[in-house]
Structure formats: C-alpha cells, structure tokens
Amino acid sequence: MSVLAKPESTPKSTPRYQFRAMTVSDLDAIMEIEPHIYSHPWTRGNFADSLKSAHSAWVLLHDDRIVGYALMMMVLDEAHLLNLSVSKPYQKQGLGRLLLEHMIRIAQALKAANMFLEVRASNISAIALYENIGFNEMAVRRGYYPAHHGREDAILMGLAI
Image (tube, rainbow, N blue to C red; front, side, top):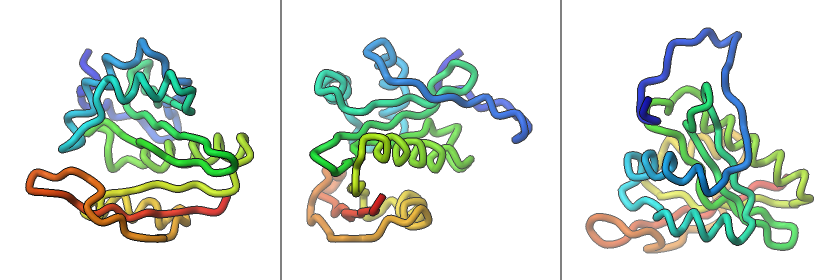
C-alpha cells in the first residue's frame, strides 16, 4: 500500500502510532511523501546528509507505514528543528503536535536549553501549532525560502525547554 493512502478510521482509544529512529532505508517512503507536501521539498541528498551528520531523525509510523518524520540538529545546548512533516492524508489529526512533542522530549534528553525553527510566513497552520506549544516569534528572515515567484520570508521561532 502506498504511503499516500488514506488513513483508516481508528478509534482514538486504540492509537497505532509509534516512533523509531530514521534510517537510510526509510528514504524511499519519505521521498514519496515530501514532494506532496512542499512546493520546494528536501532532496534525498538532504535527508542522507542529515543522517550522515548524525542529526536526530525520527519517523512516525501508523501500522508500520511512515506517515510523518522530523529531523533536528543539536549545536551545543540548542536544538534546531530542521524538518517536521506529516503525510497529506494524515494532516489535521494532531500528528504534527505528536511529532513536535516527541522532538521536544528528545531535545530535553539531549540537554537542550532551547529549540529553534524556521517556518514559512505563509504556513499559518504550522505557526499556530508552534505558538500553541509555546514557541515565540524571535525574528523574520527576509527571503529565506525559495518560492514560485521569488523568495518567501521565514519566521524564526524559539522555545525555552
């Protein structure tokens, strides 16, 4: 079954989601998801480089199928969230929050004092999620992201953990 298949209806009392560390063997499934959710997706090389750099990389599984993933880079006592993604059919079900909370726990275990991220200024739902968790806007990075017509600003957000 494709990783883009519709999620099955499952009672919330019996979640079938689990986390595990991302491996190179996950990249085919991730590359099936990535271009469907981003106008300028990461490349396979971006993911492979992150894994080679020993960044904290996790997948979220639903019945052994990858439905989300996140990557984080540690620099001293700062965690930088590089990518947090949920497959389109699984969006708007709280899985982004589940992934983000998992990454915050990982950052805490790694003794991070703060977590930082950039988010497209147009990604209102992601900004709302980050604010709801407690992230605050710290700055605007002008022209940070490629866009179909030029560049798009990024909102730099931070969370004390």
